[in-house]
Each structure stands twice: as structure tokens, then as C-alpha cells.
Length: 225
Picture (cartoon, rainbow, N blue to C red):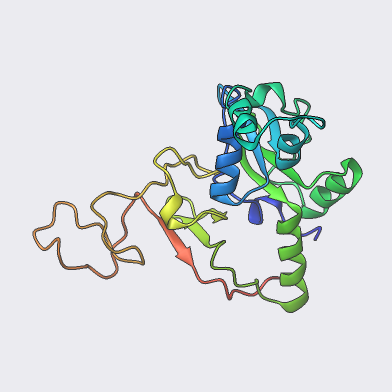
């Protein structure tokens, strides 16, 4: 693990939320994206983190509130009121061994990944470390359709945890900060170029690359030990 970098196994682009969002919005986002923690970003910088455990802790222990009353309460409380402000972070170039040590030391399940300029560029969790251990033990990555591996066309950086379908217009590559959104005129997304400004737009052109694109990588690649 000491030879593996955090950047190669973290989930990126990271899914974040604003401190002014409500707990209900944070809960919906976690459920929709099937994640357990959300870095909280304000003015481009990490302000805190909120987890599913924090959402559970926000619920009164002794209460006569109905489910609907509890949901209404979640709509009135912001994540800033319940988030952890002093966040343990790690850098993209740190080793995954360092990440494992930090999680074990602080008894946490994930670390926001922050670059030298203070931007949150990813998140690495215990699940990512489990995937790495399996890859090191078997010599190849575990196939997981729900967690594709993409590559930034602009700089070649590896991007994990986001599919072609949920890369948003504001998502950037963690390394070169190039916008990753797909061109609206692209109809073919696997090595086929953009059809914009071409008379035969209905016909794919093999071997041409759209510059506003990330590429799906086969997950049967071997992993160095």
C-alpha cells in the first residue's frame, strides 16, 4: 500500500454540499448517490464534513415527533449546524498507507482529499482501501459497474467513482482542473468523436476525440504489487 497514491484510488470529482443546505437535502443527496459522507465546501474551500452518522445524531432521542414532523425538522436545520468543522484531510500525493493510518488513528471511515491550494479534489474511504487490498492480492481490480474508472482526456488523470452519466457541467479534473462535461453534440462515447460542425453528424467518426470528454477504462487492468 505504501507504493499506491491516494490520487489513484480516491473518488473524484467529489460530491460536495454547501453549508447553507438543509439536513434533508444532505440526506437526499447521500441516498441518491449512495454515499455516506459529504464534504462541505464554502467559497471553494473545505468548511466541514457531514456523515450519515451525523444525521442520525441530529435526531432527538426522546421525541414524540411523527415521521413527517421529523422530516419537516430536517428541512429547517442546515448542515452547518451539525457538521464536523475540524476535518482530518490528506493530499492526493500521499500514500494509501498514510490514509489507512489516519483513518485508524482517528477512528473515521473517510478522508477528504485536499490539494496545495485548499481545494477538495476527492475523497478516499475505507471501501477504497478494501478495493486496493483486493487488487493487490489478486493482481487485478475488482469489477464494479457502479464504480467505473474514467480518464481525463486533457491530462490523463485517473478518475474513479463517477460514471459518464453523472459527470456534471461544473465537475473538473482534480489534476488539471479541466472541465469534464460532455459536449451536447456527442452521441457516441467510446473513442468516437464529436459530431459538431460536421455534415455527416448522424455518422460516427472512428479515431477522433472530443476535447470535452472523459473516457471509460476497462477495469481488468493489473495492479502493481
